[in-house]
Structure formats: structure tokens, C-alpha cells
Image (tube, rainbow, N blue to C red; front, side, top):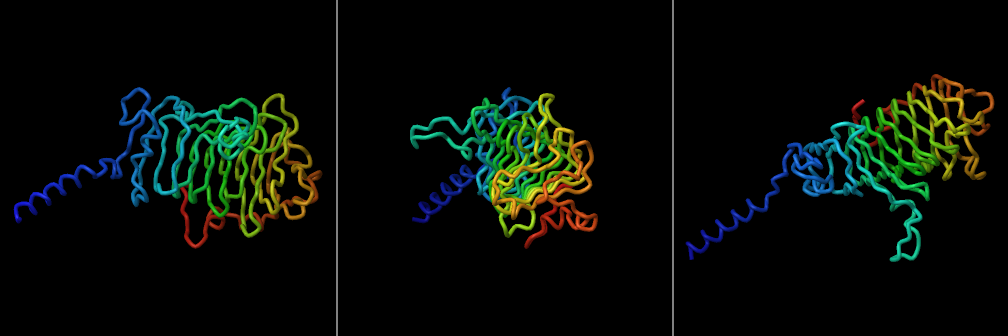
Length: 324
């Protein structure tokens, strides 16, 4: 009996050792299309990460085009996806809202079209391009976020309508040194998001933002030290329009081109302008003229603008320190 017990314990130890995930450590995982990394697809690297990691795990993605529709699930934390080269490391997909789905008997709809959906908390993307390269046949999301404390550093987000969807109220997002392009409402949703030193490129006559900030959220979208540019055939761009009541959008210390309409903001939903929180401060450029702005937007005073800091915007019950 004693020998049998010893044998069973030995077998259990072997099975436990075999079951241990060899990737359950803070080492970097390498993804490469040419087979020189541990994985050829980003999805495979995400799959081997342990749930609720307490350490920082980097998935390093070598240059190449990765045609993948990805989800970073909510049980993954502390993951960084870092590209070798921002412009040459590309994750791309091509769903759009009007693709017919037989299972539901209608089009896919906006919120299933993402190329990358980030559900987990404390996730960082760095030096990488996320693209939805669908033709202009409907809404087509490149990045969709639902987690909290997410950072996007030196990334590109490419698409047409609805490029970046910040999809969960109460979550905090930080975009720094990013390039974001699109046509209509290409930055939209209910999250609190700070855009620092980003380039925003308008590909069509339309609207940059469509915030749906909840009434109880003190802050929504804040663009600071950003540059707005437009394609050569574009001549009528609005900073935003109120998708829902209480939408909050602030452009401060930004460069606004001549393509920005003198009124700045579009009415769209007449009832929403009663509660819209649309503001500007210290912007420059031909599109920053204040005199003809809509009456329901505001120009902040210097004292008011000084109160809007990253620390104040992102501090809740915790104090989130971004890589600023």
C-alpha cells in the first residue's frame, strides 16, 4: 500500500509539472510571420497568457501583416502588445456593419466589426497598427475597448467610419503619440479618454467625434496638444456631434485646420445640445476661430483649463499612473 501511495504521488508530481504553462512567467513572447518567433499569429500568443497575471507580460510582434480578428479577454491583465515597427507591424481585418449574418437574419452591425477588441484591464498597445480595411460599405471598427486602464502608445488606428470605439462607460483610456484616421464619428463611445500629442486625420467631410459620455461621468474625451489634418478634397469637418445626451468633448492646445467649420460642432440631435459638454481652450490654426462657434459650446478660461490634468481626470478610488 505504501509503495502504491508513493507511486501515485510521483505520477501526480509528473502530471503537475507537465501541466504547468511554460509561458507562465514575465518573459517576452515573440510573434513572427516568418517562423522565427514562438508563434506565427498574435492570437496564439494571447491564448497562452495566464489569467489575472500579477506580472507584466510582453507580446513582441515582429514586422509583418497579421490578418486576424482578435479579442484580449477580460480575464487577461498586465499584457503589453509591442510591435517592432509602428508602420510595418499591422493587425488587419475587414468586417463591416452590413455584412449579412444568416444566423441572425440581418447585418453584422457596428459592434461586431472590430479588428481588435480589448476587454482586459491594464493592457498596453505600443508601436503597432490596428486596421479595419473594409471598403466604405458601413461602419467598420478597428479598435474596440471595454476594459479599464488601457494605454495606446505610438500606435496607428486606420479605418473609415467608427474607427475607434471606446465602448464601456466608466473606463479610462490613454492615447499618446498616436495616429487616428477616419471619415464619420471615427472616435466614439462613453469612456473617459485622454489623447495626448496625437495626429487626427479626417478622410471625408464629416464628424471627428461622437461622445456618449454618461451624465455622472465628470470627463469624456480630452484632446491635448493634438493636430487635426484633412485630406485635400475635404473642406467641411466638425469637431463632434452629440450621439447621446451629456456628451463631453474638449479640444485644448490643439492645431485646428481651415477645414474645421466655423461653428465647430454639429447639432445632429436637437435635444442633446441642451446637455452637451463641448469645450475648447487655447487652440490655434485657421479652424480655431472662436467668434462663430455654436452657442451651446464653451471656451474655457485659463483657470478652468488648469484644473483639467491627467491626474485629476484619471483618479478615481485608485490613482492610475500613465506613461506620460
